[in-house]
Length: 309
Image (cartoon, rainbow, N blue to C red; front, side, top):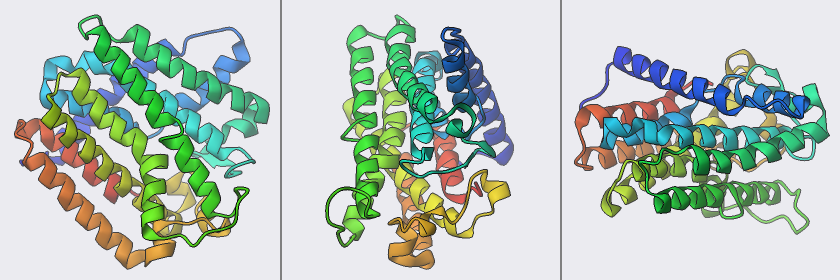
């Protein structure tokens, strides 16, 4: 695999982010009830890495550069679901956080009730966006399949289920505290963080017309990125700075959360990241795709692992 230069990667990210930001503003242009849409826009348009959207678009690009537009609505829907999860995670009933992306969390600005409703509305709007905005060039059966997989990634089999496991592992669920094993922790990460990232790479490939073999490779690559992203998050909670992170560090330990770092330590966590980076790049190298296109996915994997926020 030929690596993308730093300049190429930055140019790629900037161009794709601009597409996503412009389309998100279009999809979030609703006006009634005004305060609800304002709350939704506050969280979705308030910055962020757009890693999930970028992975979706880069996966489509890797298969067929002409398929980019086919994946844009789905990439935006992914960001809506991600924003919903952040709004809900920050609520006092869950993580009780005051800072997100360097700004007050949604419930600190709009109140807990409206924040909850804004998250609900974003989840529904995400499904609407995939079903209504995906270009007609994509077969209807494929659009429905993508919408179904997005629902699964967000629901009990994915993010919501992972959040419940997270609660259980910190003693907040209404059942006895269990000893957390590595397998249990990886299951939680695969659901809570990994499910939506796996969907991001899978959906971009599916919308671009990938065959079953390549779809499996893209799905596995997404799983690798998802686990790597969460382990890096766990490390940053220990080693990061609030001004750089844009959120409060040290929350995991203060809340007695089960994390990769707490279970395995800093050194083993970094070793696991190195293994995941190698696996992800090997998947891309063996994919049989154009090296210039897959290099952007490799750079996104590197970014997920080596970022500082």
